[in-house]
Length: 192
Image 1 (cartoon, rainbow, N blue to C red):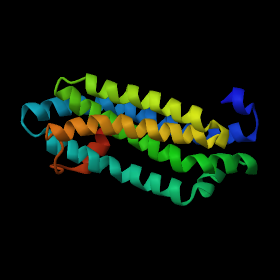
Image 2 (cartoon, rainbow, N blue to C red):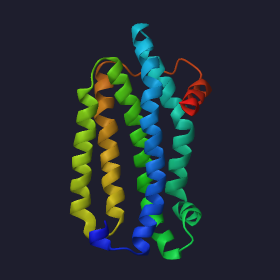
Image 3 (cartoon, rainbow, N blue to C red):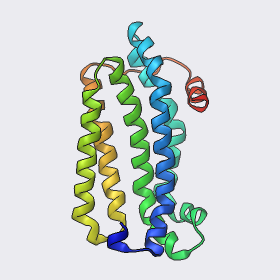
């Protein structure tokens, strides 16, 4: 990023938007620790699909509105992140890509935990690895289009990081309808 674009308003805008991405991805990391014990107990009790479904719905409560706002009103969000108009423009180009990408990483985290409850660690690792490589390829291929190429790469990364584990969960019939309270799960995330 610095080598291609140097230090200026475009990179300032990138880092303003990227800070939101990093904060959400940190939640994804913490979430894995929170959900894995519940998923392991649910698998033993034969109710992992419902537990996974409940977490999926619970997480949609904060993540879907955040993604909608980032897509529908990126300039308004960018104004909250930085006071420099040029940096706001750069951040606004990235937010519609970075916030959904971060949400995808959250779902990749719970999918990885659901697979771990099945003693499958390789599928999630494959998803993260393929996503990372594909994201890097997208960034390298499209960096001439500007700093938003980093958003595109992270979006591809997130899509693969969640898509590959989710495919495996669907094949195992480990995805089901919610079977419990979403507020209880959100509170567990806050505590975690």
